[in-house]
Image 1 (cartoon, one colour):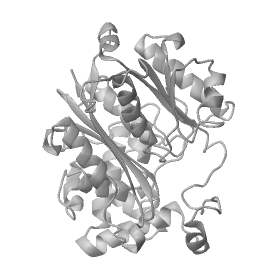
Image 2 (tube, helix red, strand yellow; image 1 turned 60 degrees about the horizontal axis):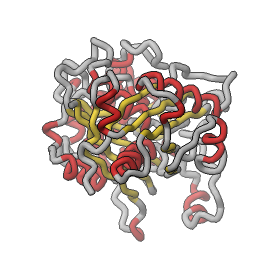
Image 3 (cartoon, rainbow, N blue to C red; image 1 turned 90 degrees about the vertical axis):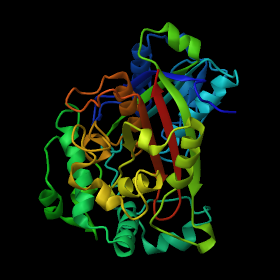
Image 4 (tube, rainbow, N blue to C red; image 1 turned 120 degrees about the vertical axis):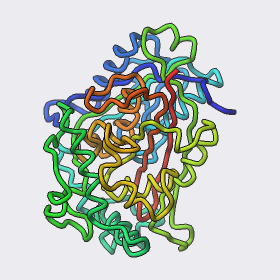
Length: 389
């Protein structure tokens, strides 16, 4: 079943906080839910589907449904890390198309900044029953050195340079200066990025994303409900999701699961990368963006360095405006899961509601891409293509 035009995103809300020492995770979930409902002009009683991921406190969706006093007839708690929320939009749209619910709420929230979680530089404590833990944990792999391995391999294999990676941070900073809520609003240059301290060779501090509290929420609804609301229409036309892993030891660090999730989304949407006016690309690190751009087909494998250089991702300057809210590199990375914010900024662009300085003219087709987990080992990937009607 194709979901092309079967569901619409009618509400989107990003929490303005970047540090919330006075709020619980459950409260943040409820606050973004309320914000998305207000954006859509709907009420809590309109929700009959609830979707969340591993950031929601409790057993799957049960605690948050109780906390918000919802009465859903369909629920989903898929967890593939930061890609979860793109996958959940896909699941919500298909549930709506199948008549399982009419109005779906999707929430994300977390407090890693307030809780002092050094998730990028410290190996994560993992469940020892996971089959991979005994083989990998003794080597002390953390997010940053895992992604650094991918960057180093890409440089070795394709000649990608640190200067080219730096352009991704430069583009994010050019956009973030216009975002009053962004954690890092100072515009940086390639030289600034290269002068920042090395964290894990070849990734420097400014190659890494921020860590923030906060969250976001989306409302997905049936077409007739969407058309009854006085909001610009954002139609879901294609989606794909997958997991990339070690493949029994056949490992290539230079590509991501976007190779498959992107191909599925483009096939369902019946569009090509050349048609996309705006892209939200998961940016935990600069290398994450470069690899996903290649895998989604915006450029050939190995040519990502040339593609991102010289401001090609800057709105109003480059060929492919990317992460116009500042992304995870400059704006926020709530709950260490940035996929939700990628969808929210894409919705803003399609509605014409992005900041005027970064709004893409005549933006009628947008893509959001999420990666969750570890690029170097195993990760979920989800792609979402949306159209302004």
